[in-house]
Length: 159
Image (cartoon, rainbow, N blue to C red; front, top):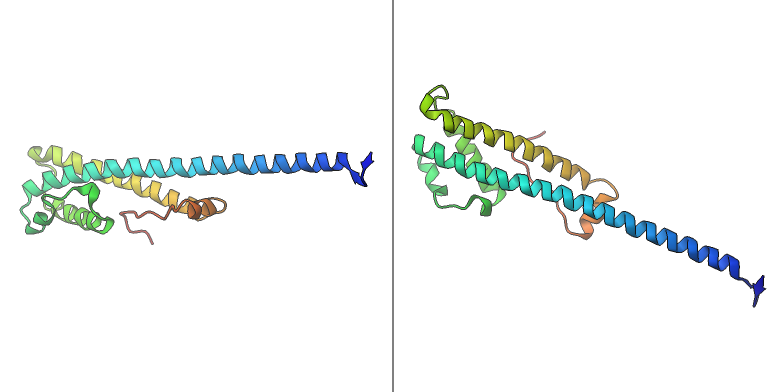
């Protein structure tokens, strides 16, 4: 029934439709943000494990292989190092590890720790690549820009 030439039922229906659409957008935004945050936390946890294992492996390998390049990282806090410094430390540990005899029973713990580091690195790189891929697609790319979530770095070269 028109009041003042306006159909009240139509206005109520359009208002209800608009409310439902806005509610849907808000709920979807919350879900997308939580998904991004969860992915980022997974990468962060794996990065922490990687930093701990890198430091442990560095300590063990540097005691077996005397290399002056190890002195650059002797007092360094691995978690505070920039990505490129961690990458060069990882390359240094990898190259020094190659000179260790893995069959020697005295090196069993070093070999085990190095293998743990490699496993964590593979897992970290997989999570980083998954996260980076996620934030490159819509609607995640929109939210990643809004919340200043940038691409993360990985340790294994990928072409």
